[in-house]
Each structure stands twice: as structure tokens, then as C-alpha cells.
Image 1 (tube, rainbow, N blue to C red):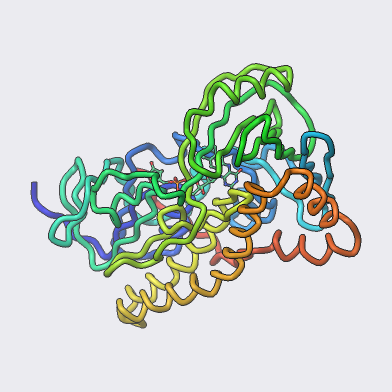
Image 2 (tube, helix red, strand yellow; image 1 turned 90 degrees about the horizontal axis):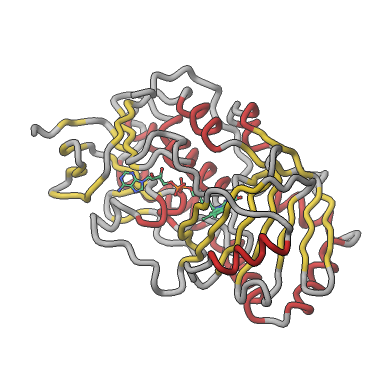
Length: 356
Ligand SMILES: Cc1cc2nc3c(=O)[nH]c(=O)nc-3n(C[C@H](O)[C@H](O)[C@H](O)COP(=O)(O)OP(=O)(O)OC[C@H]3O[C@@H](n4cnc5c(N)ncnc54)[C@H](O)[C@@H]3O)c2cc1C
């Protein structure tokens, strides 16, 4: 099969890949092994301003202005109204984004990189710029090597859709439920997503999740789960850009990976477009993207320390800290700073031709 050439190749068509591709003009190829929006791996909880900023507010299923953190004996409720959260429909969100993408989409699995070409089940493709947005497996950066979640750098989450309806987001910090991890109930309009996450990457969570479901008085339907990183990796490797989980950009502690993937995706996409326009050299662009990501290392470290505390300190201490953080004048000091993290101003909507 002949090698086909493009200006840029984006591997992965979820949050990170769609945010990068949305910024790009020119001959751009967007690759994913699944149809866009077909395979949800996330509870899809994010600040309400995120889908609004991308013009996909019609994907919102439920708005939440309360977050309750539950310990074994006490709970604390946060008033999120300064920056409300929402849960959204993954497929609708992704298809809304795809509609704004001008790149050509091709459904194929990336096998690795060989002699500068991206090798896929549909043939070889080359481009001066390749962006890895393939999630924790880092299909391009790892160049086809079997991905491993060893080394304590990855958490694991498993969740299921249930018919339990309710209000607000709920997080459980209870070692009886899951040691070194957390549970959640995220209402999604009709029903809730209920899940467990292990900060140390334990993947056999189904028995514990079924116990949790019984405690909540409900049963699971379809289950989905995967690993996600809990520390930053290198955002550039050689001439490759990496964005989202492929660059370890999921936030530690809260496991919020959607808005970092979108935020850094927009930043990376803007830089890539400047390279395509001849306004930046490739090396300059790589350096600039790395500098932007490096600017966030301190907040990531702070969240990493907070995750360590959630794993290791007695839960009652952590809940006491959580209670202090929910009080006046603490909450208005930190919540908007966290809630607006990654606030971006995506470029005006475009009408794309991204469908295959
Ligand atoms: C159970 C669970 C619940 C979560 N809940 C939340 C939440 O509520 N809020 C939040 O902010 N974050 C949540 N997260 C984290 C969040 O899902 C991730 O951080 C986020 O999806 C990262 O986006 P991404 O685009 O970088 O990667 P992904 O969403 O993982 O997308 C990677 C894409 O690459 C494609 N791909 C992978 N390998 C290949 C290949 N070889 N060839 C071609 N394509 C490939 C995949 O098909 C996929 O479309 C949750 C995670 C889990 C596991």
C-alpha cells in the first residue's frame, strides 16, 4: 500500500484529539480505532462552562451545583454555584466537536511508528507533525510497544450506568469501600453513573463495585473502565506532541481529565497551526508547547500531594480537611481558581467536514 502524506496527523479522536484537530486547517488526518463518540470511558463530569465554550451545550444531561464528599462517618457538601458542574452525553459532545473539525477522519488502529510514518491497519501515513492523543496507551509515543500500567503512574476506574436518579455529584472516601481510591455517584439526567477508582491502578474492581451498588440500592447495567494517568509525562517526545492522557494531563486526586485534555489540546492545536502557516519552526513549536505544559507543574504537584494524603492519611483527617475547605472564607478563595482551571477561549466555531 503506498504511503499517503498529510500536513499533520492527530492520533485519537476523543477529547484531546478533537480539541487539537478543531484548531487545524490544511491537509490533516484524524485517526481513531473507533467511530467518534462510540466508546465512552468516562463519567463525563466537568464544569458547565466547558461544553458551553465549545458550542456543544446541547450535550449537557444535568447541571450540578453541589458536591458531597462522604467519609465513613461524616460528609461535607460544597456549594459549587460559583462554577457549576455538569454531566454530559459523551457521544453528543464528541459528534458536536467533530462537526467543527475540518480534518479527514479515518477509522483505523495505529500500530506504531516506523521510519517516520504512522503505521495503521489501513496503511502508512506521513506528516511533518504528529500529535499523540491516544490516551494512556500512548500508541504513537510508545511506538506500538505493549502499553503497561505498572509503576504507580496510573489509576484505574470502573463504572456502570444505573437507574438511580438524584441531584449533585457525590464522592466517597471510605477504605471499607475501596482502599486507596474513591467511589462516585454522578447523576446523568435519567439515572446515574456509579463507579470506583483505584489510585494505585487495581483493575479488579467489579466485586467491590457490585457491593457499592447494593449499598446504593441499585444494580449495574453496562460496565466500562480503563486506566488514566495520575502524573504528568513529557508533553513532547522527539518530534511528537502528546496531549491529554497520552501526556499524563489528567488531574491527580480528582481524576478530572476532560478539561486538561481539551485545554492543552487547544494550546497544542494553535501551535501546530502556526507551524503549518510557516510562522513557527517545528522545534520552536515543540519548545513552546512544552513551556506551556511545564507552567502547570506546580498545581499538578499540589494535587498529587493531596492525592497522596487521600491515600495515606486517616480518612477522618482528610474529611476534616475537606470540611475546613468547604467553609467561608476558604471556599470562595480556592473553588473558583480550581473551577476555572484551564479556562480557554476556543477560536470561533467553524463548520467542518470531519465525518469519514
Ligand atoms: C471510569 C472513569 C471515569 C472518569 N470520569 C471522569 C469525569 O467524570 N470527568 C473527567 O474530567 N475525567 C474523567 N475521567 C478521566 C477522563 O476520561 C480521561 O482523562 C480523558 O478521557 C482523557 O481524554 P483523552 O482524549 O486524552 O484520551 P481518551 O479519552 O482515552 O481517548 C483516546 C482515544 O484514542 C483512541 N485510540 C487509542 N489507541 C488507539 C490506537 N492504537 N489507534 C487509534 N486510536 C486509538 C481511543 O479509541 C480514544 O478515542 C474518567 C476516567 C475513567 C476511567
